[in-house]
Length: 107
Image (cartoon, rainbow, N blue to C red; front, top):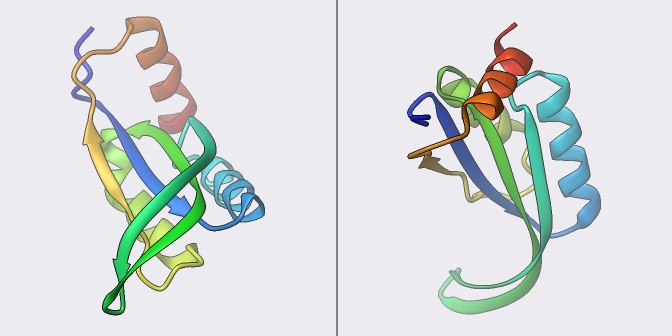
């Protein structure tokens, strides 16, 4: 039940349509097995001032072997000039879920 072979990638977009488009593209390319997204409030520095925005946070679940390809692809298709692309390690995962995720993305 270790999770070292799985990763979670976070990114945000302004519109729900963009979240749906990114999710469809990543799933279609088999770079992710599952993507969840929901609306969040964000505060951040941009061009010398603090901005506040409603955004959609995407939680992308993938295999460790696909992370570099996924990051490159996501950076290319992302609508933001400087997208948030953060990779989080997975410490533990239920074995059946890990097998499903790896089967979906790596076969």
